[in-house]
Image (cartoon, rainbow, N blue to C red; front, side, top):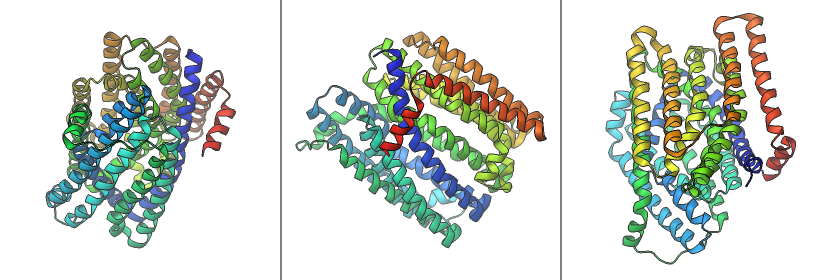
Length: 493
């Protein structure tokens, strides 16, 4: 496959996943706005803490299977061995079910300690017991999604994601409108159940042949490879979630629960828009790398092709978010959350480096280098938290954003340099040109928001955004007809 054809394929898959992410974001915008207005900063903080806690438990109990399984399923599917594929999927699903029960049990057993640690009382003990069902269904949902991802069924993934989000958001809004803060637990539980039903419906469309009965011993012997790699990812995920909880506890101690709400708002906005780009990477890029993990030449082409596309698609969004950070907070939340703007700008700029780091970092996982992945991820998280702790007395709440920016830059340097010296992954001159040009536009957007006011700020921000958008569209049209791509995406939906 030639470079231009490779770019076209990446653009198509990125457009499909990115398109569904845009729809999901628009849906989430409405839900987020309602939560912010009805629950305020305290309610948003509670939602953030509960979601982080359940995500951490799900990650620990899941043994990393939803991520590591993608690699094995992708390799089996690429070899076009139907029998091996059905066997791999059967074993994978069995262990995902076991991990789902394990996660629910952990949530119940630790419901009281979790409530006391996170809220300094036992108020949410029963709430965590109910959230055990959320952990159960979300684990199963992630398993079904992993099978679709491993088979690179991008269209099914996109459809299931959008439909699940629409239905779960509808119920969430109803619960928040009627029950206010008392509806938080119900919203999370019902949302997870809806996600399970919808994901399972689309999973069945894969029509994977049923495999003959497999003994527990045989499934364990086959699953050990997935679990071994999964353990590394789970260590990282669990560590990140634990550090996220500690960070929220640190912020709460320093500036109260409202500070946690402001941090959650900035973090949610930064994560929400970036999911358009990184979601596409996780959706098709990772299974593709896994299927060619032993060919460094093809890996280099795949990394550069993916990086080129995501830089062109993601940079204008990043530039727009930096230049109009205050407007974004007002629209998505309310004026009560304006304190989050200071850290949001730096987080968003750090995401520019994160795109590059992720493009190179996925090579570690595709190669099966679990220990390296753990070392890198934990080192990055510790550096991030250490920077916050050391700089808090000087910069206060602002240190969160600045520390994120610095740590992401360091992460980018490490992943690229290691990939370059170990696997020969070299950022092409074409990508270097895009990085330099977009960095200039990003600097203009940041400076306009940081140092100017009124019409001058608006003019500079709009100019940076428009120039980056025009530059991206021009380069994308050299790859393929954008209008044709949009029509294809609409027809698929």
